Image (cartoon, rainbow, N blue to C red; front, side, top):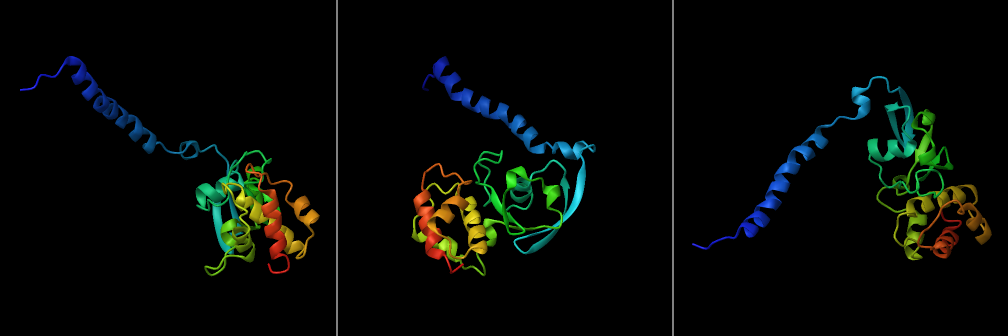
Length: 196
């Protein structure tokens, strides 16, 4: 029979002990209910809105932002949370055709509105011409800001089907790209001008 030193025994069993000790903590986290479920004083409002052509009637907490509603409750995760304070544009969506930062809009303000997210660009399994142009011109780099870039570009093209380069740059100034891929975004929008 092989002898095991005390050190080897402790090293071998300590990982198992740590794992077993962590299980109750993990289970407790999973069983926690949202604060609003146990706190009836959190104000809630029922709203009606259309998201990507689908009508919804939802009860929302008055403190939820539009991006929280989209991502956490409607599971439309294409809209990204970048800065979460209305500075980067990663969360841009169209509200009644107007591009807005969804992190700085309350969900309750959307009552009666029509929202379009990046998921709503493709139709019947076919990419929007703008999405195709982004791919063809290598516009996305890391891709994090891409949904916001697409939505601001879509808003521009809905308003002005044949923008100039300067008009594209001006329209997209509120959307930051940490990869600095701005020229590719401009080229993609210019290529689709008149087709979207």
